[in-house]
Image (cartoon, rainbow, N blue to C red; front, side, top):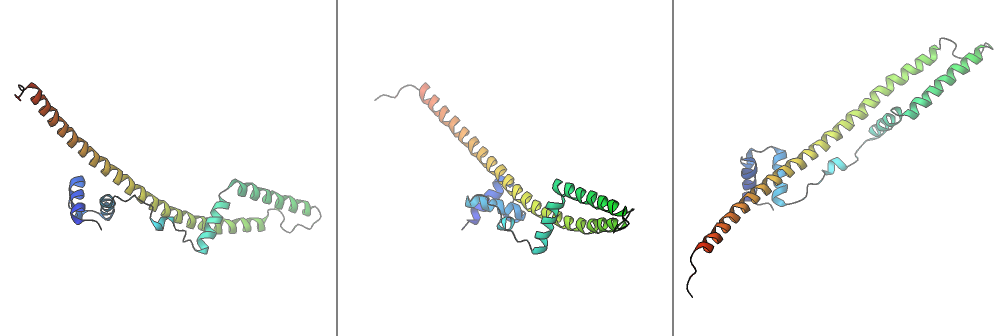
Amino acid sequence: MISPDRRDALAQGLLGTDYGALTAVQKSVIDLMASEAPTEMSPIATLDDRRLGERVSDAVARIGGSWAFIFGFSAALAGWVTLNLWLATFGRAFDGYPFIFLNLILSTVAALQAPVIMMSQNRHAEQDRRAAEHDYRVNLRAELEIMRLHDRLQLSEVQLQRIEAAVAALGSAPPTPR
């Protein structure tokens, strides 16, 4: 259990304000410092709670945003056009020039692929936001810990100067008789 006095002292000493006036993130950092616990990644950020649709959108984005897809799709288009031009010489083309059925297929793929990729990007943006919040907590804690160490170092320096002054005063004083 974290002592409220320790939390209040840390908040006042490091941030110059009462613990109750801090934001939720600042309170969590002060609590971590007071408990001296390591800053861990939130279980929510590490949990893979994707539903089937989200997994599908990630797979579509991964495949649709790759060079393999571009080369494969380009080969399929070239094959479609070549096959139809060759079949047209026999009067058997199933999608002759100007390839209207191919245009319909391309439009349908684009109309479906774009929103699916955007869903994946939105989900990844949410994950990035969580990671950025974690990074902010770690950075804030590091900054506050450095400030606390700096204050301790200054206090030690002042104490050392007092000790040196006392030793110097003893060294310049006449020896005491035994």
